[in-house]
Length: 144
Image (cartoon, helix red, strand yellow):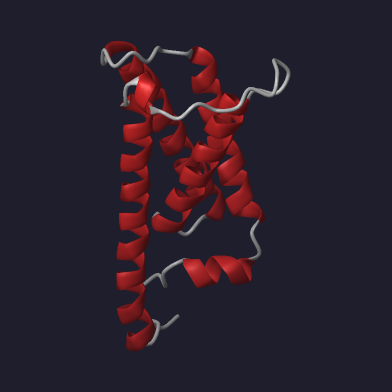
């Protein structure tokens, strides 16, 4: 097993760096949206009790975060990568919920939101595993 060509390795590091910056920027966005005072967050149209837009927003936000994390973590096992990314996104969501309860911004700790974050993170990890290998190779940096 030889090393990848130098040009492939050299171009993979900037791509990995950009992927990590995108993850950090998204984490900052989630932090702001999670901790901003309730009056500053735009309202979400309520479609009824059966289908809560707030929970869908939590699912989607943390699914996206888990997928972004999946592309920025380096490991040889796809399963380990997806589980690590999902766990990191879910932990981040749990921390944001706890901080909402203690930050004094008019936001409340909501365990149901924490569960929605967890489910979204798991769905994001599953989505990453379901992506065709050709798409993963396009977004994932070459491992050296």
